[in-house]
Image 1 (cartoon, rainbow, N blue to C red):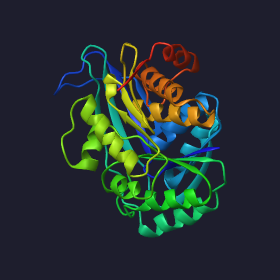
Image 2: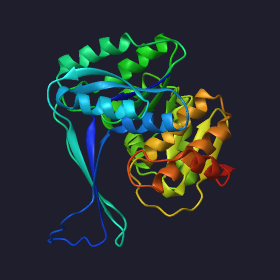
Image 3: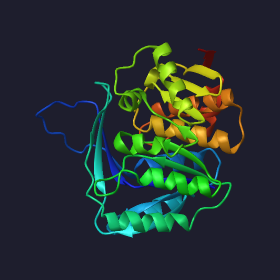
Image 4: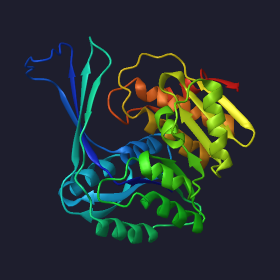
Length: 309
């Protein structure tokens, strides 16, 4: 089973228009409302690609039924530790005439330390050797910044492979716990080292330093420029095929889903890079944070260019 943690759930409100103007009023604008959060995005795409997935996390009780029903419809399992309150809301404005899209991500309500400790015990009851656990998204206010680090250590002790995609203090503290796979973007890479990082060679050098810290696989995503992946003595630059980009929200989550599926299926390192890059590219072609099709992913894999750095 592939478990995807969800500590900071949200509802995504996506408006589609072709005539947005600052200060104006738009009426009868099509609206799509969907449960989101990085764990939801990753798990949904993992399931789309044909693997069993579960979302496990802290869920505000006022939104629990909505998230549960939505995930069940997607054939994604869910294990929620209930907490008081409701989820945050994010807004995406898709303007077909004036790209790129605009996004407003709200700050979620604080979660109590008590809920965090309760979730750790809750998670402990779901650990099973041979599973994969993905820790993605920020740690909400109120919880300890070392929560992911503690979860990673718990998983490692249970013989579980761990995958990390977060930022800030949660990222720096989790590195010490030694996740198996790390997926920073270029901004997060600069956060780790506290300096500006530019150019393929410089990025690759910093990625190698992360390997030296004990991370087995490092995937540094660079948006439309692709990705640099490092493992052992391999350093690969992966360039995606050119497609018409509709919505980039969730591309990093789709990429991570590709890594998880490839790992589950024991793909080679280069084929893991190829599948993950294709997943991120396929997501950019569609509205919504977790919209990909399996056929598109397989087709795009053939056009991913991989070169050694």
